[in-house]
Amino acid sequence: MKIALVSSRQDPGGCTIHEAVTALLSQDVDRPYPLESHALEVVQVEDRLIFQDNLDRSLDADLVIFLSRHSSVNPLPVLTVHVTGNLGEAAFGGRPGSLAPAAPAWMHAVLRQLKVRAPPGYRVAYEVTHHGPTELSIPSLFVEVGSTEREWRDGAAGQSAALSVLHAAPRNNEIPLIGFGGTHYAARQTHIALSSRAAFGHIAHSREVPSLDTAMITRMKEKTGAVAAYIDRKSLPGTSVSALEEMLASTGTPVVSEGDLLCLGALLWPQYLSVVALAREKVPGGTVHLGREVPGGEPFTMEIDPVLLEEAWKTGPKELVKGLDGLPIIWISGPKKAVYPVFITIRENCTRLRHDLISLCVYILRRGNNTAIAGEHLIVRRRKFDPDRARELGVPQGPLFGMLMSGSPVQAGGQVITPEMVQTCTETRIHIPGLEKYL
Image (cartoon, rainbow, N blue to C red; front, side, top):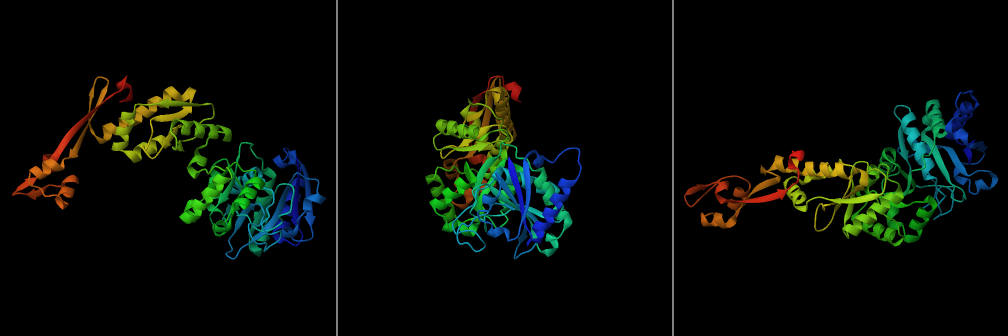
């Protein structure tokens, strides 16, 4: 692969990074930097980088990495990475409504290196898509140091940026995404990328989202090579999220959650799609939830006793969800059931995970209920408020009912009525073969 490292002589931040790069490359080292496995060209241009439309015509390169300064109205020490483009007007170079081709895997690789190498006090972040150049035919990315003259000329920051570029090495299992929502520094997208294989290309600032249309979303997707989209829902009003989801659906772009991206583990994207398809085949309209680092492999479905699962949910819903999220398993929720008794994993894990699931449910039930063991049966006893019995004892319907339901005694008809006096007891017997193994 041929890579051009480009800076501008007018740009003090870019010059600082450029000087660090050339110094590092001129040193005699036992092992070359990962970037040196590619054909490198280090170039300086006279004009500002934002005006370098069609620069690739004069370069023999497959990728351009621009080394630049970052300016901000709210200056802070920062090292950033982003792709260029104008989702709307072209205030700082390029053409309006035009996007440069992104290199999401390379951006991801540089971002992760910046996180490791940033000097104390420097923030590391993606930036949303903004400024030129936009008219490039090959992928590119900006690596920037900011946000004032002090940081632009900071040798330590320049060295960190240079080392991050020279040590960048995509892992080839990244998941290319487009992003929507957030501020200029794309905090959620940055956090997700630094914690997972999610590799963002074009990202739209929250203020840009309402003006997007299907054509621009398609352009973002194509210029990124994205397989899915992530929406920072907390940064957008509900109406914008709904409109965005409709447009993404119309372009055939899946939307993935932060939770799923953080839990993909060894799953490659095609495997994730096959898992989602299998889950929705088993539970039409269901929502897929990935537990902790689901392993790669052919997906396989397994089931557990629906009564056991339902009783565990009634007893400790939060505890059950936390337990499921801690297992390398895929579980499904839907409008009719909070958790369906159908789970997805790989065949090799089935026996162990079936044991873990049953153990989790048994633990929740025994901790939260009056339970008994009879051979291979777990007996779950529940006490329930009986309004008919309360009325028979002279308790009028209203606030006193609420007090009894919350466990407090009341006075009615000249006597004290305790909660136990107005409760009925139900028993559910659950057959669990080999129950003693799960206790």
